[in-house]
Length: 484
Image 1 (tube, rainbow, N blue to C red):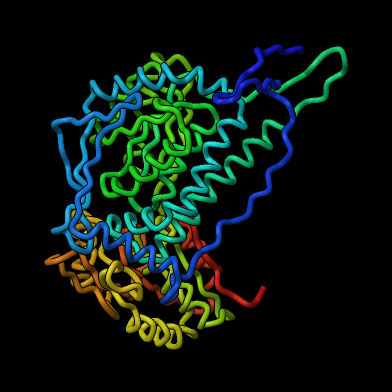
Image 2: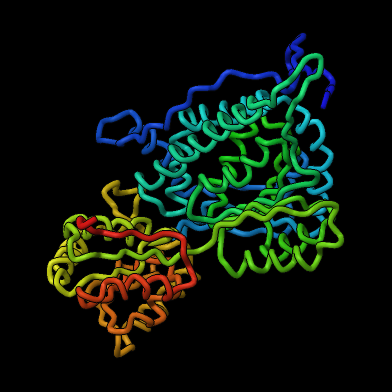
């Protein structure tokens, strides 16, 4: 098939004309180095200065529709989890009318953005990665630490390294994707062109990874789509910083609309629009189920078939075989269960240990538990994890701890203290259960709670089946063994 497209001119150039499908050489990209922030290092000094700049400050954040800042009357606040008296952001909520205006604005920007050569779109994200990696690194880390209660290392591997990698590798692979073309037999030209979806993509991001927000909105935009981005209320400060970096890197106004909103209002509005082309989601299972249901009920009104991509919760297991190396089990489990207070869908929350190893594993867990420092990550870079994200999370996790205290099948081995006087602090908790089907082993907690079931060593095959059948989640898990 012969395909002819108008020659495209790159904005800012006098005359640069190339066929859209022209092969481009592969771009070499390497993973962003993770900085150590050692005392006396320049990155540590820059981060401490950025943290000082945020102390006691409240940033005002608007909705951004069609490149214009919109200040609405519906104002909310994001507080620092480890010091909830500090309002780190004052932000505006979009209502249904403003969301519909954002949809119209996005659709107006779609054609021009989609027709840009992929190398032009990729350059925006390469530049955004360079900005994140260099001049704005300390700022995005500080806002992630103060706003989402991440430690310096958790912020570094998320808001800097991972997000930089998302932008760079996405751009690299997008270029390579378009570089793969079908064989042509002269005088015909066979070509493959990747287009954005016809409509808009709704990006709904969680609080626990700054990088995920940038990727959920950024990846569809890179591929020629226009996006309505609803960031998490509990990550507003860092999300807005990411959005500003994308604009600074050259993202045209209107390609991504920044629209904080009530979850139900946003979901109802985007799923009722005939122009919905896709939903890019990370969050809870109930929320994603609701979106799926709404899309299915509205299917006849859409101009196309919306694509839904979602990553939801988890109930990560660690299975320990009798041949396992105990120090590896202890180290891996403590880090998986308690880094960022267990607020990752991949956090270990259930541990299965053979009775033959349990005394050694238990001793190791309790020893490491005593070393865990919980506190203010902005004041003490030695903090292992800080407060949980908000009052709702604090109350939810506290209910699980009360369940552990009152259930005859559960025994708290260590931790479990709660205090929300200054921040939403919950001490890491290790619980042993006699019942492998107790709700604490089945349901997602999303907090610093590790439950342990000790099984008869000879029954390890049955335990593998038990693990598979205990929880509806199947996101992540680990097997510790030396006997292959």
